[in-house]
Length: 286
Length: 302
Image 1 (cartoon, chains in turn cyan, purple):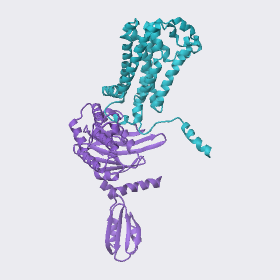
Image 2 (image 1 turned 45 degrees about the vertical axis):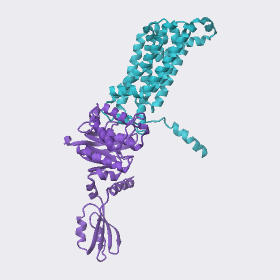
Image 3 (image 1 turned 90 degrees about the vertical axis):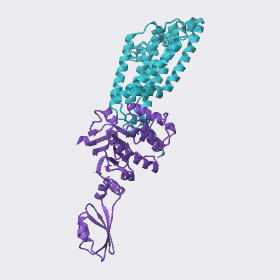
Image 4 (image 1 turned 180 degrees about the vertical axis):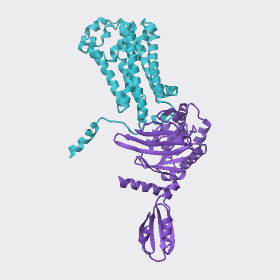
């Protein structure tokens, strides 16, 4: 398992780790530098110009002058989408992309169990995510005092924990879907769509109470964003971790039973859709 | 005796959807031998080998690899087996050395790196080049080295010389014979008959998901039909020869009769003793002809 962990962390995901850590870290520094400017603005005047629907959709925008409101509006509010798309791709590719490239066949012909392989890669995935989160956390925390954002390092850490957990959940969902859907690309796409859909649904639920019963069953309903600075709901975190564990166990069970494909063996396609598309011009010609 | 058997499959069946890929493969490979697994594309060679490593699972039948059940204990099986896939794919951004070191780590760093160097030198392989920049033949060499480097008890090689030039093919044959001399059992699939003929001590022919022949190449040739040309001193009635069990007359040309004989020659020789024979020639079929005869049967049946 540790061989696979090291290989995935230091080779397969090295580029993503470096790129996303540096990128998000620089972004965090930039947004932190703008904080004093935002505080000097007449925020109430700005709020008066914003439509009520927008204020409801981005509910923390009204408290943008507070550290938690600023953190949420400019970072944590939309990180589940940006990083959600990243983890959707990573989770979906964790095993099945290698199978599609044909490299999994030879790896699994070596003395490593499927559980160890998946376990090592999952651990590497979680570590990569933790490193990206960690760099961003440091970028917010270390210079925060100089820009007048008076939060302790623990207060800064809490929303990152919430973000990390929800991203793990989306990554695990992508992994599970990659075991069920015909390709890793499709699994990543479906997970990414679900993450974006969940984000929109969550915002719309602030506008329309009738969506509340639906949104309750979605992960982002239990994501506090920047508001976690005031205290993390550990019950919600535990719930998300539990769902993540269930998704991982299901993915492991499917991988354990999986026929490792080579050259398209055992794959499936959406029935007849592609055939219909291909046939159409021929039928027209006839 | 399970202790002396490297591989056993009994009644192995495998479906891919509606395709019945393996229809009851029965195979036995004794330890220490080199066995060629011969068959046309789609006959079930790769499927059989991948079942042996638990990469795919059969729908029926049993497999024992070195006395172990691959489904019950796949890691133990793979620890003792070296494998070269038919469609070799390696991580593109690695060098050959990176790939081999990674596979060595998966084997618990048990590989003697001096032996790896020997293999690399013999195959004239440059390990510093990125996989993505290697030719197909050189990628195949990396695959061969990773299969051989742990000195496994059993080598499962799917088309081992695919993409290699004839000189390198000969070197691979020498490597396989060397591995055998070291106690390794070699089971390799191929559709190159000359290759199987060159190194295999026994061959198994698979056709339509069933083993149709399993014997030493020489024995298969002996068992196969052979052509016999007999020149008589005077023209003879060929009907008497046609009556002999296993003999059929192909052509009659003046005093020369061409026959096809299946099985033993004894009946024909005894019959010919009653005729004024001037000359007799027997043509042994090549392994290729034996194989093609099976192909022909396959086509007729389908």
